[in-house]
Length: 219
Image (cartoon, rainbow, N blue to C red; front, side, top):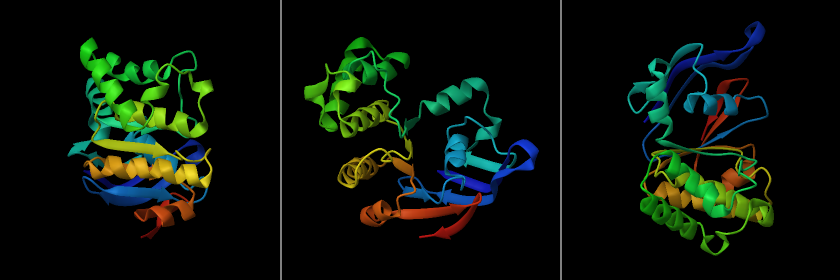
């Protein structure tokens, strides 16, 4: 599914964000990326999102070299992904329903299908009763559930999440991770970047520790 073959990413003045990194994530895996700030977690997610390309090496997803995709192919590829941010990235002037429905509308789903799919995912994350609320009326945990609903409404094959529990307390963090486990149980590949080692221990999934852009530990 995901195969990084000796990828490196350099920025200004030859500073390495990733260096000679090789990693394989199979279809249906649930993998944590962990390590200190600046270890390369977010850089790897950016490459997987095709927001950037490796300076060296190859990043293959679903048999395709991401660096070789045309702009149109990049758009199609991103439609197969879901992404969850630490700070939710919800539109404050839109309701819960509108925030989630935006994705199927942009993808061109028929209006009846948009409504049905949006309600399905909001019910699944337990927020069907908050569809008319605005983000600022929600708790942090509820906002992250909306963000997860938005990420899965297009039925992605891969979910990427960058510190999705960074603003939540331990109990809420575990609740959110349980949602990711349920998503994974449906066959979706899940990759979560987090510095929270205790949360990784509690969830009990495979982890890849990065340090200075290289793999320091596999567990």
